[in-house]
Figure 1 (cartoon, helix red, strand yellow):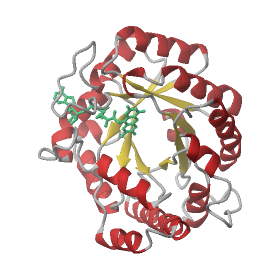
Figure 2 (figure 1 turned 180 degrees about the vertical axis):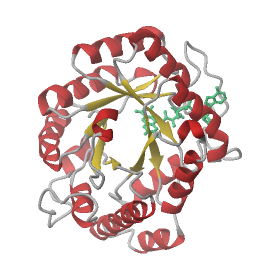
Figure 3 (figure 1 turned 180 degrees about the horizontal axis):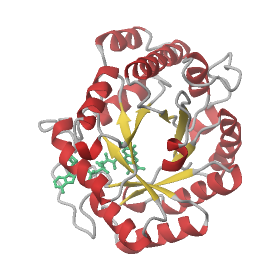
Figure 4 (figure 1 turned 135 degrees about the vertical axis):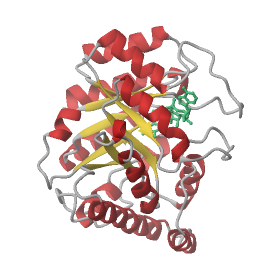
Length: 321
Ligand code: FAD
């Protein structure tokens, strides 16, 4: 992934998509059809999520293998390292390697839901340990990404220490341990991302690191509320008001969501002087909003026709996952 990003031309921009493994075989089949359609949007890479503690390990590995081998798109396997042990990580890396997957996103994982204050008790305490472990055991074979938080990382509901500045020393440690790029938590306030980028660039160790903003299209009002609550992403007043006023009209919410995310991309692109080369979409296994954003943004090459109906045919996946 790093090489692909570094080889982009000056004005070229990429997109990438996150998928999660569906729970059922029917969901998997539906997703496969969608993946084939979404590969027409020409993503630079696809990422596949990993359930906390390795709870989806088999399904994640199956989906990642399908994306890499059958769909033929460069795939990043997410891996979380807490509430698990080295043998699970070893197995996952082995299987990834056997199936041609050369990229991983090294994450700590969230604390168990019931525990607000939590001391990890296993082979790994944080993502830095996982980055180190992958480099120790596999050298340079894997290109490694890590997570970044434009508004600061928060464990559970305790926002007392939420600040990007607090995370910086640990982000530096992740990069020094061997991380090649950073994908951010979702955000809806472009100014928070721009400040974060400036903060990173003010540290020698982070000034050249590849930084990829993470964006979540708005699918429904309730999903938007849940995602912003869980991620502690702040929502600018104008966006909050617009979405709230339209909250009962799913079509309108989606349409507004396309405008909101398109505007964020245009602003970041205009203000970062070619330093941000692409945009990662938490697409929730759905395609229409992403395709519309790409078509509307000018920045991202319009590759296929914008869908006329944003809701069309998306229920099969949603009901499964
Ligand atoms: P870390 O980098 O380890 O940081 C966690 C916290 O600990 C931060 O507050 C940091 O400042 C602090 N910290 C780090 N090192 C130290 C240290 N040595 N001493 C003291 N404090 C330290 N979760 C999943 O379960 N599955 C997924 O597939 C998944 N994908 C994700 C993808 C992206 C792009 C992002 C942004 C998040 C994803 N998550 C996923 C969520 C992630 O697991 C959680 O946000 C988790 O709580 C933190 O993971 P991390 O890798 O950022 O942790």
